[in-house]
Length: 379
Image 1 (spheres, rainbow, N blue to C red):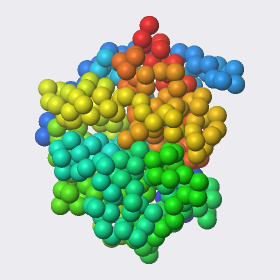
Image 2 (cartoon, rainbow, N blue to C red):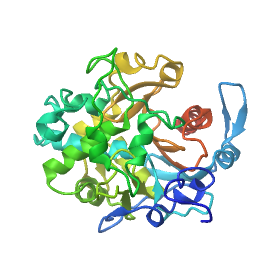
Image 3 (cartoon, rainbow, N blue to C red):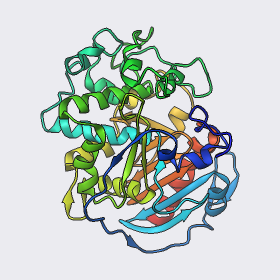
Image 4 (cartoon, helix red, strand yellow):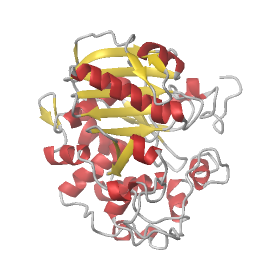
């Protein structure tokens, strides 16, 4: 694409193309599909004319809103069947789309499985598994602190600030970059106000720590672990891939590209207690844990803003909880979602290439649309 480079491919207008073509831009590692794709039943319902009311009193039909919100793919499952599916911006059902921080929820699911197997202790210090982090802000945090992002660390995750720590994280992925592991080892200060376990603070490198632990425990790479632990048992229809740094390490916090239907399958499996297409993919206990909100008392201590009260109300195990409904979600910048509503028996997945990493359209309007669809189907 003219003018696009590895330095700017995540920026508009290039991201409208690049998020669907990750493997043509950066080094990647494949996550092999399952031997047999799990079937997805279909019961089409035209939701395009469904009106959604936003807090600012605007009312917009679902179909029109999808077109205006830089949507690339949108799928709704109700009671396990596809009721609505739309592709825009040249995306198809076979397109691997970068899902950014939705990746975190896959990493966490694998870590929870290792914890259940007794191979990782959530109460153990991170440094017990990764001695290389002994002199960092992670050293005396527990694995569970990092899973819940309640570990104390001085870190600025501002996607619009070129001097923020997250910029250094992204720069570590470039050809001349230091790499993810070196970036983690550079994070040495803890937060001035909160101790470990006291407040939720969203920090993408936390998930890179979890990815490092998974590799250390399994003795392999993250792509193979995902295939063996989740992708193959799930019956994923298509191959996925991880974005690699130039030291051959997968980005565990934001680098997974998968198809829309396979994202929906993952959400549906969790909704169904970890059981999908005749197989127990993750245990019922882990699925229940993901769907059960925790840490509400720590959720808005660091941020203390209206979004962290009125829209979302909790975060644990790399999953967000929404206010006023029995729903959790995996979220990614530029408009990526896997939404699981237990009240309505609804799963929604969304691929987007919004020019902004974060804005009201992504973080609030999308939530209103998903809640409205779930409420409509529940009726």
